Amino acid sequence: MYEGFKRFEIQTSDPEVKIVGRVGGKGPAVLLIHGNPLTHVHWHLVAPRLAKDFTVVATDLRGYGDSSKPRGKEDHSNYSFRRMGQDQVDVMAHLGFKKFMVAGHDRGARTAFRMALDHPDKVLKFASFDILPTHHMLTHATYQWALNSSHWFFMAQKYPIPETLMAGKEDFYILKKLTDLGIGKGGFTDATLKEYARCCTPENIHGVCEDYRAAVTVDMAMDTADFEAGRKIACPTAVFWGELSHTEKYFDPRAAWPQYCSNIARIRSLPCGHYPAEQVPDEVYAELSAFFKD
Figure 1 (cartoon, rainbow, N blue to C red):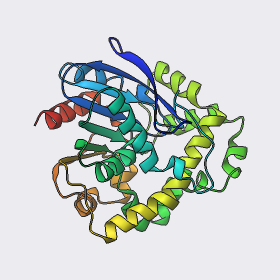
Figure 2: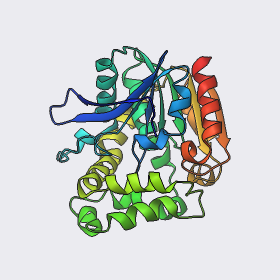
Figure 3: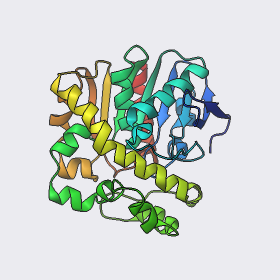
Figure 4: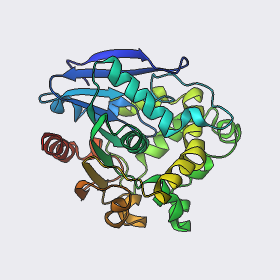
């Protein structure tokens, strides 16, 4: 899937965590970060094309794929977007990139959002795929959205409730989540589904649960403080979402995002669901290539 790319495993500043990913191409550095329940494989139809003009780095977040999956701390801080973002900064520094552009999908977009706030000297541009800022989403949630995004609140329950209930059902979870129709899911190949199922282990499930626990606690606290202080992402930002996804069905991304970013260069829906890089890779490549070249 990543012909010409080199696999790496890099130790981060957290002694418990090594990040696995791939790097290839030549030119300005671009970091691609996947979402839940995926891995860096999510970008396999986009990364090789971007590598014609950029040095492309695609990683597995901590808790996902082949990266480390530490036990969550009592306060969930080791799965906060700040900590996951620091992992990515560590990886890019190890590869020799002090400054870079970043695109993220789902949890990867939330990680990149925090990176753009915490590391404005490093993140040159930020592209987001199919999310609303966490603070906006949780303060504007409706029961209709909650019913259709139940994993947010199920996985955020106290350890070990969701881990225990999902034990032995990982294959059911991953296939159900990725292949349901109705909100723009699907669009995956047999090879990618097999890879995602391989990585869906009890350790991964714990990591994902800690990710969601952190989102509604420490991450929400950080995002609320930033919002109330009027702190916004300053770098050029591109915002994309699937017209069939929950992002458009239950929220108004065009109204929401300017409250969190002061320099929105592109903002539009794409003809897909929640997984643009695998559902409409041509459009994703074209948008990212143009945005990163501007």
